[in-house]
Amino acid sequence: MNTLNNFSRIDAKAIADAARQYGTPVYVYDKKLIQDRCHACMDMPHAYGQTVRYAMKANSNRTLLKIITQAGLHLDASSLNEVLRARLAGVAPDKIMLTTQETLEGTQRKMLEELLLGGLKYNACSLNQLQLVGEFAAKNNIEVGIRIHPGVGSGESATRNTGDDYSCFGVHLSDLDDVNKYAASKGMKFRHIHVHIGSGADTTMWRKNIDLELNIIEENFPDADTVSFGGGMKEARMPEETAADAALLGSYAKMRVEEFYGRTGRKLKVEIEPGTYIVANGGYAVTRLIDKKKTARTNFIITDGGMEINSRPLLYGSKHPVYIVSDDGKHVISSEFDPSGHNYEAVVAGKCCESGDCQTLDMDGHATARAMREPSIGDIVVIGGVGAYCSSMSPYNYNSHEQAPEVLFTESGELKLIRKKQTLEQMLENEI
Image 1 (cartoon, rainbow, N blue to C red):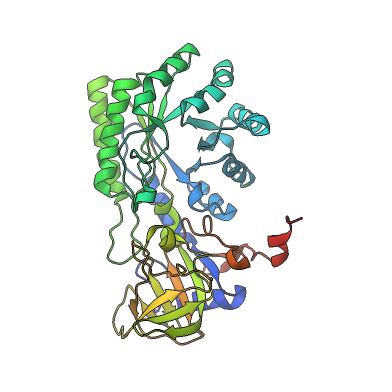
Image 2: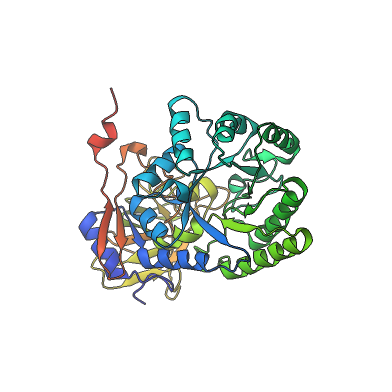
């Protein structure tokens, strides 16, 4: 087996070439796999129309945004700056939905208003947000959507649940009367209703969210013509995990939306906002084994990239596959997708001065050893499933480490640099 796994075209040679050309650590993204995931979402069954919005917080690299939007996806932004990044990537305002915790005033408020006039879609996530934009929206006949807090949610971990009572996203059901009264006073009608219950939610909860949101619309929003079921479609990073089936979820949503039409005579267009599902398994963090240590109980392999390139194990207890590749790129020494010959167990640790800097942590934050073939110092250690919420979210300047470069593995097998490595001077340039 010379490829890393059974779903990507990236092999040992491509990994070794990336390490040699750009140094380690370096992110490598599989363009074809990302495009395939885009097409899977675009092809989901639907009844009366569908828009797929990529959750750009997962990975907002300009090149990836272009690839994804060229596949037909629109964008879901979580901040005004994300909207501006999307614009710099050439994405038109009417292809972007802003759903944010920010309350935009002053200069930012003026920027938002200009974008709204240009077609930007906006979801109000609180009564305060609605009031800040309501007068302007009503005066200019701009429709405003609303994000609902349903009171129930699901996620890969407690910190990724965005729908239960310990999460603050959206307008809670208990505030709907006040929101609707304010909208009526301004002559506004809510046509776009949005609920997102969490990231990495299991498919049972995702289907329940569909039912819940349709009930909320039927009872509270007579003018709604678009329903957004949010994102959070589960991805399978590890070989023992099962990813959400986009086609099956689409079929379920289609059936429920058709039943809604049968009851109400209203045809709803569907929106979804996948992020992880699009890019997670298309990304690999390529590091080098720089040291080996052991205690009375545990072997450690030390790599030159850890929590500063992938903080998900530390934040969530997330599991990522580990691959060992020979320095010359001639073969994959060890793969979690091919466990034959695994005769060694080790914790995969990084170089940061932080006891949590491990890529193999459990849900309680304890370092856990992984089975593998024993590697040697100088071998390449690859962390899989890092396309989402890694380069965009990790504390890359901790211990004054530079942000790692990013490389695209193209359809032809070419490695294309899409983000340069940060320099120490760039890290310090804003210090006075």
